[in-house]
Structure formats: structure tokens, C-alpha cells
Length: 324
Image (cartoon, rainbow, N blue to C red; front, side, top):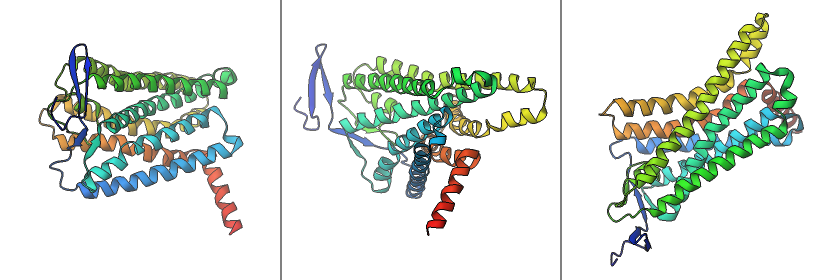
């Protein structure tokens, strides 16, 4: 208890819980181009913020875009901004400016925000799949199953569920005692690398992390797959080839986002599972790209592929040109 590096001691179940002043983020130790990578991430972050805020601006201010589909797109845009804000600025601070100390409480906050919005990103893609499912498979019942009120409820429920679940995951981290190393081998205050530093039992945290990973990835992904199975069956029942192409065309932008989000994530986990000599720095590079790139690409894809958004952008451009 006389250790000067430990700022917080308390008793829980007759055991001493030691919380350090903070952690040191120790990642990319053998990666030679970390400065270049940080500059690249700064560009990614600027594009993420600029395009997503522009998309939010268009949807909020244009009454004709106040529909269930664009509420789902608005939800994804808000999540994208917060998700990249939770990691990229701190990565630039850590690896470009060589300031790798993170206070204990800020570490928990970053952990909470990142995992909350990474989970919400996955669920947001499932919500967009629901919109396509109703539009193609039940076009005559859209006013029943996919109204603005129903979409608002679905979005709200995913926020309440994920924010609450991750809050529990974060709170139980305070039950751990960190009496040895405070060096986190990751690119931010990551959940598993932090709880593995604990010198008391972290079985509960490990179980919660494993369950959360399954919920975050497999539940939305399974729903997306089942939705597209139903969509394909419905499309191939259509008699007119033109109707089939038109229906499938409306799904292209969503399928691109699903591929960009899930393929890198699943690939990295599978490689880590089966390739024992997987370089930790390469794994961190892959995970950080899989986390940071989708929020940057999402608004660009929707801006380029969605007719309504392109029409509004062109109209806005014409108005700006006229005013100048």
C-alpha cells in the first residue's frame, strides 16, 4: 500500500483492489512507418468527420429525407463520427507525438465509448438490412412495418441495449487490481489487453468480453445474412428482369458497407485463430484499419450510390454556385 505509483486502494470482498494512475499504450513496437500511418489516420479522420457531418446536415435539413431509410443512414453517420473520434485522435497523440500515458479513468471512458459505438456500428448495418428487407419483400406493408416511428424505436432500442451492456462491461473492470505491469499492448485502451494485466481473477471480464464479441458481430451479421436470403428469394420470384435488377440495385451500397465492415474483422480473427506466428503489430494494424476505415467509407458510398443524396448534393452545389 506504500507503492507511490498506485493512487487508488479500496476493499472488495476482503481483498485489496489497486487502481494505477493510468496505463502506457505500448503498440506498434516493430512497425517502422508508424508516423506515416498516423498521418494517414489523420486524413481518414478528417474525411470521416467532414463527409459524415455533411450527410447529417443534408438529412436533418431536408424534410423530403425524413424517412425510415434516411433515419437509419443518419444513425450510422452519427455512430461513424463518434467511433473514429474515440480512437484516432488518441492514436495520433500516442504514436505521432510519443505521449503514450492514459489516465485510468480516461482509459475506462475510451474503452466504453469505443466498444459502445463499435457495437452500434454493427447493429446499424443490421437496421439498414431491415429497411431493405421490408422495402423489397413486403412493399405493400411498409406503412405498417417500417414507419418513421418504428424505425425511431428500433434505433433507440439498439442504443439503449448496447450502451447499457457496455456500461456493465466497463464497470466490472473497476473490480480488477493492477499491481504489476501497466503496459497495454494495443493501439488504445483495449478491453482484453487491459484486463489481462490484472493480478486478481478476471474470469468474469473474460466471459463478458467473449459473450459481447459474439453479440456484437454474430447477431447483426446473422440477421443481415437471413435478410438477404429472403431478399434473393423474393427477387427471383419476380417475373420481370428489370424489376429484379432495380430491386438488387437498391442493395448495392448496403452490401458494400457490410463487406467493408465484416470481411476485414472476420479475416483478422480467423488468421489470429489459425496462424500462431501472426505478427502482433500486423494484427494491430489490421484491427485499427478495420475499425477506422468503414466510418470513412460509409458516407462516401451513400453519397455516390444513393440517388436522393446525389440529387440534394447537386442541388446544393447549384445554389452555392448561383449565390457566388
